[in-house]
Image 1 (cartoon, rainbow over the protein chains, first blue to last red):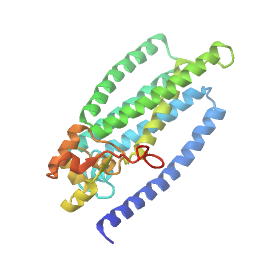
Image 2: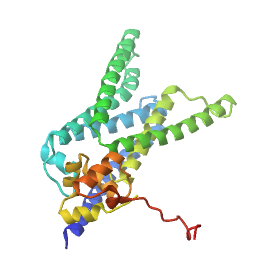
Image 3: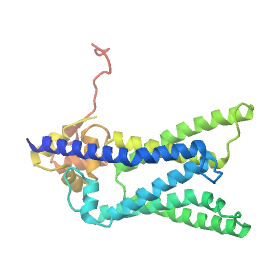
Image 4: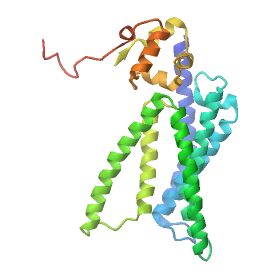
Length: 219
Length: 74
């Protein structure tokens, strides 16, 4: 078997292992989230968008932690950067993974925080809600800074991926917003809150960016 | 855009990651260019041509094949 064929074979094997692992982890998680969205959490009265926000936040935090662990070890980070021909990650790759993990962790916390504050026993006081808002503003500023850092560290391929994903999301979401807002104005569709719209936007963004990444070989 | 990246890389015995290091992009970027999933910027195209000691037009050429049927200019 020549080098090229061996590399392809390794890639196929790694993809198959990842697919099986994803199914094992994703199937029960997807079932649980679907059940929560449909029937609600036992003892809690959560809107579908709150359940979806918590599920997305949990996924982001779990992924962020996994990348943080991988980004702290040169060998694991190298395997993540190139599963077919692993080699120790460069300092730039390590820095990139750590920055990416921080952004994901912050995004997860930002999405979960408003829901979790609303779940406090007895309801959150006005002071607590203001403190939570101040925390959200601070974390958002930090996340924006780290997002910009990722953009600066990225090569043109990754920037094109982000830009194309943003274009698709804008087109899909503004179309959905136009149609839903029109239906709502005409009294044909139920009212949606800004929080509902935000959660839908996050979900669409994740699906679009994941799909684009896989299609263009960013794995 | 069609390109001879894979052939030129094989001639040098470089992996995608090694070529990526030489031109300042990730292994994934090299893979995407080789498979036609990403058209490089002019600057990157010049860097790639330079690292192989070739001209840009010797490495890249636009895919002018008509989508269906024969050319209308025939």
